[in-house]
Image (cartoon, helix red, strand yellow):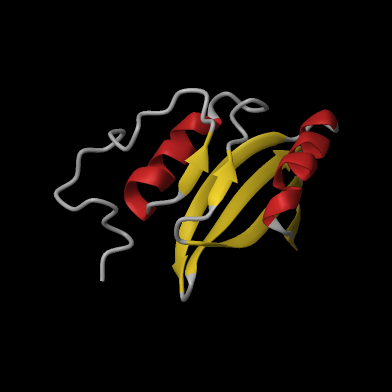
Length: 112
């Protein structure tokens, strides 16, 4: 199995995701990690024994365009990142508006 992590700019996310989809990759996971100045987002794709991840930093309230128009099931990951980390994912095909998870703290993984 090969694994590659590509550091990309936020502006490259949709184009690179479309390229991966058009070459047969499926979306494997999306996650967020708290970073010093906001978040680091990681979008991972798999095809056969190839695993490719796109990684980029975003400021806390910086908008990130949804990939759910390419991979409809991405709405699950993207709503989770909104609710738990406060990520500003825009144009999700099924947006729960901050109510995907009901938690005691709003965005608990960004709380200090």
